[in-house]
Picture (cartoon, rainbow, N blue to C red):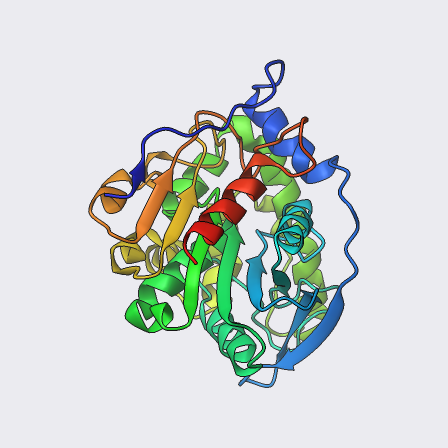
Length: 321
C-alpha cells in the first residue's frame, strides 16, 4: 500500500501562496548553469529529437522530461540535473519535438500522451551500454507521458527502468484542462496560449496548407486549442478523445516499476482526479505523496541550494536501487 500519508515538505513560513510557489521557481530561481553536450537522434519517422547530456562519468543515468512548452533549459530540469550530478548520476534532458530551439520536421510535434518518443529514447540510452541503471523523472506534462509509458509497457519497462519520479502531474487531462480554464489560472492560460501560437506560426510556415490560424485570437483555453489543433494534428477525433486516450490515470494500475508521484494539494493546475489515492493504495509499485503545499512544480526551499522536490527525487531513486 505505497500511499505516503505524511510529507515532510514545508515551504518558507512567510511564503505559502500557491501562485508564488508556482511562479518564482519557474521564472526567478537562480540555478547553477549546466554545460550540456547535445546529441541529435533520428526517429523512425525520419524526424529528430535533441538530447542534452550532462555526463560526469557515472554508471547511472536519469532521463529528464520537461513540461508543456519547456525544454532542457527549464529551471525545473536544470535544478534536477544539478542534484543528480551531485548524487553521482549522469543525466540526459530530453527536448520533446520542436522544443530544442529548432522546429522539428514533421507536422506533429509533442502532446501529453505521446509515449512513442520516450520509448525510443529509452531504447537509445539502453543501447549505449554505458549505464548499469536507467531512471526517469518527469515534470507536469512530461510526468503524464512518463506515467502513461510505464503503464503501457508495464512488465517490459521493469526490465529496463529501475525507478521513476513524476512531479505535479495532471493525471486526468480533462480535469487538468477544466482547472486551467478557471479564473484563478487566467495568467498561466494566456501565457500557454501565446507560446503555443508561436509554435504553430512556425509550423504554418512549414505546412501552410495544414495549419489555419485565422481565428486563433478566439482560442482562450485548452479545450479550444486541443479541439482545433492538438486533436486533428495527432489523429484524435476531438479534444475529449485526446484527453481520454492520453491521460495517465487509467494506466497507473499497470505500473511495475517503482514510481513516485508528487502532487501538491495546493497545485493550482490540478483537479480532484489528479490525486489518485485508490490507485496508490492498490498498487505495490506506484507511490503517491501529496504535500499540503508546493504549487505547480514549485517546492521551493530558501535554506538549501537544492529544492525539496529535487532532494526527494534523489532520495527515492537511491532507495530503489
